[in-house]
Length: 535
Image (tube, rainbow, N blue to C red; front, side, top):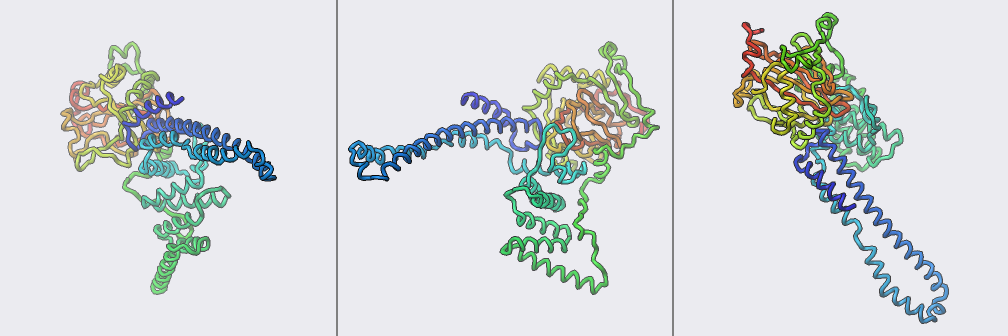
């Protein structure tokens, strides 16, 4: 058994050693944590068995001594009149009881603690927990889920039951609070109170919740409610030092507010007194459109446009390989033309690519438009790796297939990128091509701009995870084995700004994709330039 455990540890340590923290950015890497936890449970059960055997021996000794001392204490002199009894009493107290002491002091937990200590260096970090909490809040906002729905685990397409306890919800609220996100702090702390009021047992107290909640609503500008919650807190914990100071401060602010209203002859607004707060506006101008499309709302596929969308067999400009076995092609959008191809990759090819990509997965980066430096960003939550044709014959085969389908050369294309999305994994609206106002991101490649994108879906996704185009009002949902293709540049070489797109947060499921970015150089005769700027 110990040999098996050791081999298991070596196996998953080999994977985890390449992946320090940021587990939340890849479901593929989080699966390794499942096996780590399973190993810990096995180690814990072994420790429990040892402790139970130890306790059983101690109980047996105690029962034996209880029977003996009951007899001896009833008639001490008579009992000790027998010389054997006198000898055994001396022996027990000099030898047997010290031996029992040594037995009790034996550290049966040493093996388990050693195992736990070794594995802890590969555990998720505070950053992972904060990232996981943000992911749930992102799903909450994007798909308009209230905390109660998430807490009950009532999500579409789920195979397993999962619920958040009071303490889990408190952890969510505290994570938001620590990030200065008072909007989500309020939502989750109110959920904690709701579950406590329903009688759920927890280590978290109402006083703790009210402490966070009162300050959060104050930060949102709701002074009246902050005062009310602080009074409730003090009724539960009269000696709460910070609450006492806050109460006096809130009362003073409220008095100043009343005096100001009297002098200005105005009335206080009631918007925030009802405990309903607006989600703060953030940096993304098309946030509402983007999230609506992710929910399947606001798709601008009119009947007139739909009539222009067709299905056909695609032979890639009479490419010999495709004349024998053409691909099924379906129009997803008319202008710009976005198409989906079916049965592009087999299940076996997908599994092989995932297998060779997984050890290389690292947090996906974006290029800073000002500096041109690659960096991680909160708006891209996934891990990716780049595969060369030398890595495995399947990579070369898939590359050739994309070349045949598109009619473009892969000689100047980027390596095959494989991406796995994590909890609430997403990539907010972005362009694949380099804009004129940016530093030339692809100058070092010497192959020009990204002319086209070929995106392979390597998994189905139970809920969420669509590819959306906010400017078009288009949404494309993942289907395993299919691929979508579009041109990022017009024939003139100008960027097609309508192709700004995004990967929606994964609500339920594990999303794997791979993509190939084709560049301008080498395509001159395969996709000739247009004569005007808008061609």
